[in-house]
Image 1 (cartoon, rainbow, N blue to C red):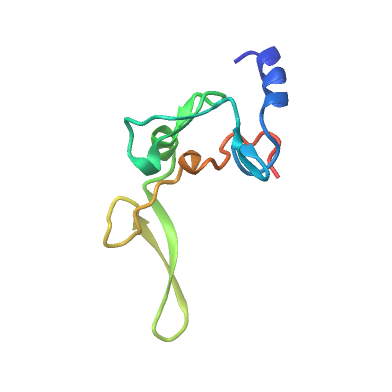
Image 2: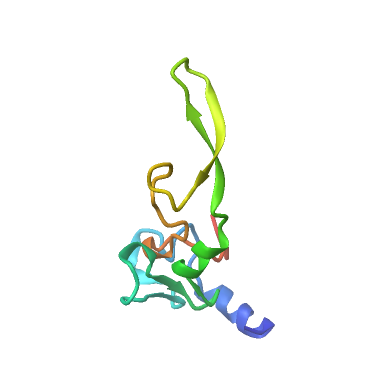
Length: 108
């Protein structure tokens, strides 16, 4: 996307934290799509970014630090494998499927 296209896109992308206008979920960002061939919680796509949830998820590190509460009330930080369902709740990191903005344009 060139500078002119990004300039025009700025006026089309709704303000806020979501890929739709505040208070009206039917006024969806023109760059947001859903890829029905993907998993339900990984099927959001943003043509402004040129990425879908499934691609965004690959960008996140596989191992991340998590703090786990110990029996004595203290916390211990350890590395958790996002792909190991015994250590880590399996959720996708990209949130486009839920119309949460990943582009950061007019965020907030």
